[in-house]
Amino acid sequence: MNEKMATRVIFFIAGVVTATWAVLVPFAKMNTGVNDAVLGTLLLCLGGGALIAMPLTGLLTSRFGCQKVIGVAVAIILLAMPGLSWLSSPLLLGVSLLIFGIGIGITDCAINVQAILIEKSSAKPLMSGFHGLFSVGGIAGAASMTGLMSLGLSVVIATLIVTFMVLILLLLSYRALLPYANPAEGPIFAWPKGTVLILGLICFIIFMAEGTVMDWSALYLVESRHIPETLGGLGFAAFAIAMTVGRLTGDLIVGRLSALKVVLSGALLAVIGFMLVIYADPLILLLLGYLLIGLGSANIVPVMFSQIGKQTSMPQMVAVPAVTTLGYIGILAGPAMIGYLAQQSSIAHGFMFVTALVIVAALLALRIRPLLSTPAE
Image (cartoon, rainbow, N blue to C red; front, side):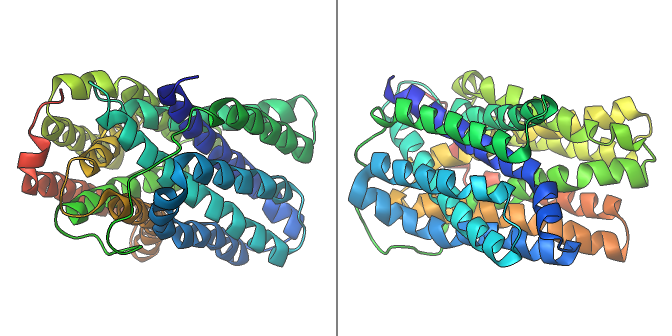
């Protein structure tokens, strides 16, 4: 296995384990017997763990190399994951989610460090394809858990099988991971500045849009657009499929266009998609809206990470964790903000707010036009 394939495998693993937890959430609530408020607090443990770990990843990769850091981080995930399927104590579940989040946070940052290094040494864009494997992993993780349980296996056994599958993938790819990273420069963590701040804010907005669709699409279709509950998941399905296809074909697109054109056209598609979701009536147009949001959002974040390797505002070992952390805050803050706006007015108004932010992301991209305007080599 070569370095590019190993990078794709780790992105795939990150998608698998994230989707596995998404499937486990209802079981975790049932096992612990907690109410929605306590469950929300437990979910913050995962996000908190990731946010604690991400700023440290640049220092860790610089000191120990991507290979060791990714190997240990995925091992942490695999140790924590089985317990998420059976723990009945809210306290123990919270601790396990904190550990699980730490593993995910380090993995997400470290593999992006490796991806930037691999892409810089390549003659063509690779970042969209790398991130596309995360989306494929998400689909595979959800399908594996659902398929195994539909065969009559318990949730615990299904989780153990997926855990074992991920372990095999890690062992197969480990030797091909980079044993080095960028040398340590500057502080362990710094608030993003200059170009890196703009890259981080764009990621924050796009991740917020993704988190909004992930957490609110089904409820919006059922409660606001009166779609049958059995069809509520179609919106997110259309979004996820479009995003996966968009990322898997993204390297070809980015290779032919400048990064600026990819970002601006993507933002335009996402805005049109949100407008359809907000104002259209037929289900087919609503689903088209979600599809356009996924297609438009697909390559914006990968393009931002590619630019981290080109910018000179901050050292890469500090810039990658800073941008990743900002993006992750967007995933956490977006759904919560939409919930607040929905409580005060409606989910549709929350979607309008996110639409306005996507336009802001396009305007921010224009602020770094020189960096984004150079066609990919």
